Image 1: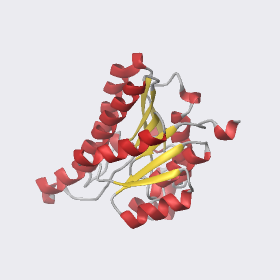
Image 2: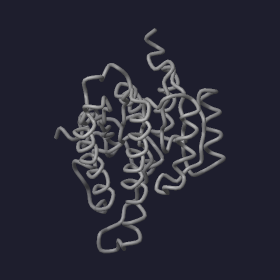
Image 3: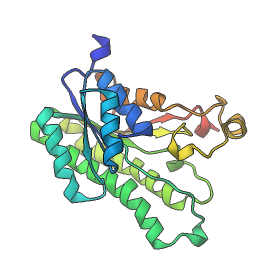
Image 4: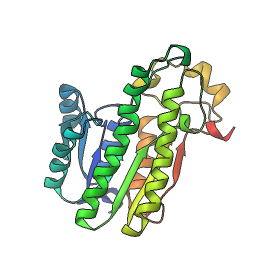
Length: 245
């Protein structure tokens, strides 16, 4: 049935305990998948998994630490062959270049770029092991195509994810492992809590509003499903028209 198009499948959503990641996990579970969600806050993660239902399984994880990946992959393997990896975990802050030190730059890159790389690497190993292919979805951002002041590190990380995705897609296409990226625009989340929608949206966004997390989740569900079976190396821009300007 259409509502269970991911029935029997297994997915991992890093950073899946809140915001866009939680919305993505909900969409995948509602489509029939068993989903492992990860995050660094144990209490938040357990509450998030409970809110989704029995098909959600939380594993505490810092995506930038290699030694924390085996527990995530083992939990997913117990549920079945890995079908989908959503490399969603990320962080952001606004730091002017003149006051950005190397520690601040590296801290963001550890989560955003190194975490995305480790997500990709571990997903590929699992999918090669079962030989059935799969879908790897990397969460970039429109800020990886355009930028703004005080975003040298964030835009750099999100642009890096875009090209990491493309290189992987070229390398893995023959193995039926599809790699695509989602590029959200300004979307209601913890990261945009301080943004004034009434002031910002009418001038920047053709659709005159911010996005909602479940709209990003819909794009992830499309990329995870057979509806996108001939799509790899692609960027799905979900931004209300922001980068069309």
